[in-house]
Image (cartoon, rainbow, N blue to C red; front, top):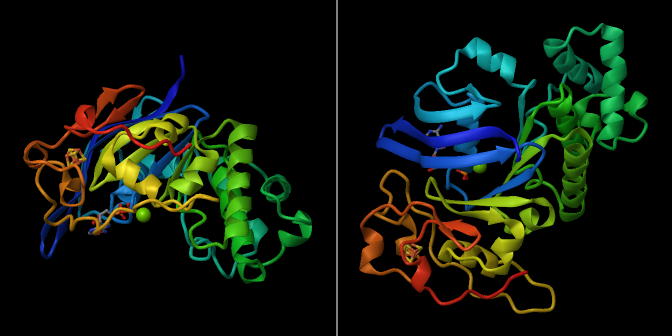
Length: 326
Ligand SMILES: Nc1ncnc2c1ncn2[C@@H]1O[C@H](COP(=O)(O)OP(=O)(O)O)[C@@H](O)[C@H]1O
Ligand code: SF4
Ligand SMILES: [Mg+2]
């Protein structure tokens, strides 16, 4: 049996805004298994970042968070700031889209990695500096001992993202959350960063949550996928099943928007994601769904097993068979 390292149950996040309460995450259930690479996909605003910022305890105080997040059996929701500081960087690490803002411009690269090592491990400065160079090597920085003495501005965008990964994995966390880690990079560098993430996952057995708006990115590396829309999970399953026979109309739409070499691009989803201050009733996708019927505006659909996928669509059983995107 696989071990669950992260178990999220009925996670809800509401922001109090000047225009009223904004429910950004509306009851997410999600498991991350040890050593797996889980993709989380959805258009901008679907609640991907907020879900994992809540997991990390990094939301502003005006965010109301309820539900349960167990990390290796320990409850993170409602945990003290002190406990969360001891978790972040040691058991759970998160990397973001913009690698520059995460690095301190006036400190040398090697020192920034050493600082992360020494904040959670009892290491001498010398041992930390040595380990920092090894970590730079692991993430594919050439001449790591020279590069360790340089400053962030001397690194390209892709090289900075490698450094961020080195910092994130310094203490060998159980889960690495990568939030759009390749979005700001050009296509060649994107592929290299994905390779680094895969290498880390394989070498250290780290579970990785890869968050992206681009299913194409996930297709290359993920074992399983969670598709999010309007603060909910709308479909989940293995990457193979999802590409082979997606069930939820939103997943079908995302897949149809992908460029396919040698084939015509299919019909992408029309319209825009909803304003979460006032989301549509029932299935929030009904305003854009080609299969929407009156029944869709009633209850909020929950995930139900549908073949080997779990799908939150009240009409899943009646829909025409989807195209195969594999
Ligand atoms: N700090 C915040 N205050 C108020 N609303 C927020 C805040 N952060 C995110 N939101 C809102 O929460 C929703 C989900 O955002 P987010 O998780 O960032 O989406 P994604 O990462 O999927 O693009 C959006 O409607 C966004 O505007
Ligand atoms: S519940 Fe209805 S609106 Fe929502 S995805 Fe299914 S068919 Fe479309
Ligand atoms: Mg985001």
